[in-house]
Structure formats: structure tokens, C-alpha cells
Image (cartoon, rainbow, N blue to C red; front, side):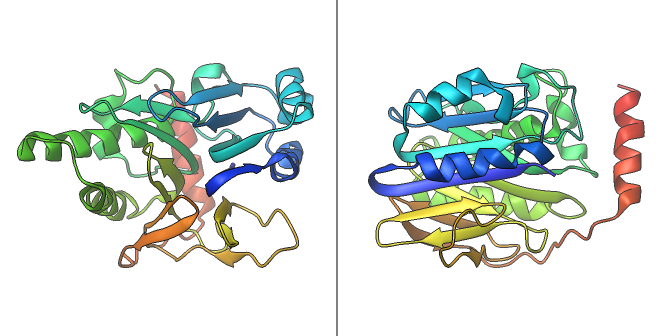
Length: 258
């Protein structure tokens, strides 16, 4: 299982200790690491490698230099779908037809993914996670075409909540997504996504990363944070994923035939 990290704050903060703790978990997630920072919402700074985070000279230099950020996403990969190469490392970024850039980190597996098959021939890498992002953007684009304008914040939330509720049925769908303004988080696998809130920031993580009071992210409900505060929570869709080893055997067999 991969691990996710998201950070949203009202102001720039020193996040180096948080990142060091997060990336130290790479001994159990050795197939790649990624970090996205958002100094400019139109052009996120994404650094990633298909190597174990604890063995990366690039990541060591980043952490040794200290990291201050207002918004960031992090990922360490344990591969289930896709080979161990740069194109399959998270985060993934893509622009919608209004120019808004969306960036995703995902911890999950799509077992029943007919809705994502259209993107097999257009994605850059091989992962179902990248196809999830392309699917979300396609849903956003369809709504923007229908309305003839970019979506407002509430409308973007509603499109995502609907897409996630449908895709979560039968699938493990833990994710953190940033659209240049708003950070979204979702989990449908119990005990695998948490948040820590203080006076001006929110951190999301697969596992608690400090001694603070971490709480479970609302279950099977999309939540949204902006500038370090929660701004929206959707209704629970109820599509919980229950771990089943046979699901993964089928994924491996299907992937071997691609």
C-alpha cells in the first residue's frame, strides 16, 4: 500500500520535519517517491523518482536544504499496477480545458475500472492512478462544456464528489487532490487516512506523523480544505472497500496481459 501526504496552510510553514518523517516510511514503500509544491498554481513544481526515497540523493538535498511551503503533496509508492519507472511515480498533474491544473496522489487500486478504459491509450504511464486523474478531469471538462464556462468552487466539489462516489464502488480509492486553490481528500478503506489540524494548517497522511491529535478523515465522504481550513464535506456515499487478496490476484493477471 502506498502512502500519501497533503498539507494546506494559511501561510508558509517549515514542513521539513513532517516530510522527513513521511519519507522515512519508504523502507516499506520502496518503488518511488514524489513531491509537489505549489508556489505557482498554474505550474506546480513536481519532483519524483522511481527509487526508494531513503536512497535518493535528490530528495536528501531537498530535505537538507529545508522546505517551506503553503501547499504540498507527497507520495511514496508500493507498486501494484505499472512498472517501476518515472512515468508511474506520483504525483500526476494535468490541466482541464479552462487551464486549471489538477495534481493527484493516490493510494488504492481500481479493480472494476471500465470507466477508466478510455484513457489507456492516452496516459503517459501505466497506472490506474493516472487514469483516475484523467477521468476526473474529463468529468470536469464535460460540465464546463455544458455550462459554457469554468466551474465555480462548489461546482468543482460537486463534480468530484459524484465521480468519486461512482468510482469507489468495488474499488480502493484513497486520494488527495489539489486544483490550484482547493485540496480534496477521500478514503473508503478504514483506518488509512488521517488529518492533523492546528490554528492555520491541515496535514493529511496515511499514517499519523507526529505526536499531535490526528483524526480519521471522514469515511466515504469527500472533504475539501483551503488555506489550512476545512471548507466542505460531502455526504457519505457508503461504498466501503473491504480488503480481499483475490482482488489483487485478478489485477496482476489482467495487467500481465496488457
